[in-house]
Image (cartoon, helix red, strand yellow):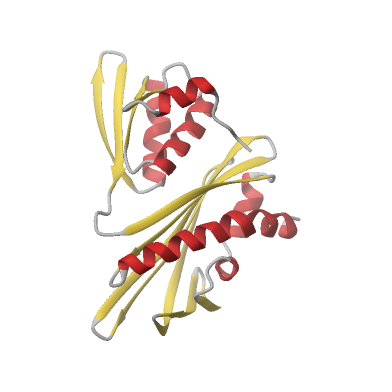
Length: 225
């Protein structure tokens, strides 16, 4: 399990996060941790680390604003979907990123952490049907977007949208998987929702992510081959 040292903790309480003395691996992990705990953040970087912050912002579907002053660069990262309710968490697993990626890209995994999902049926390539029981019951198509960013970084995005009588519901789960050290990975899970009952959805998301923190490492450990 990664922990923040005292010098990093001092940086995290500041308005701007100075990454100028970080190597690329430490910068990536730090940016992920900060964006997991803050809705928006400003990072002070050089040209080499600028690309890392921008890549993470793109992977997380976040907006970014870049200001340059000589060799010093300030990048502010902030949410792009104003209307959505979302929650996220970070999980460490003792497997290589590609192994975790191959397990997570199967959406039947969601049933272990989202009790409202009662069944998952495959409709076609990268398309599934979910049976949902929450407030009301309904079936909704689910699309899967799985992408290898490089050998040590992967994304899996599950998204669903369904127009029901008098309302429309959209929701999804974004997984970003990247290597921390050899044989160990960090997974950022974000659940998002747009539609009615958003305050209720927010409370359910907290339960889902706690389930993921508890169940996902053991599920991946059991399914690794």
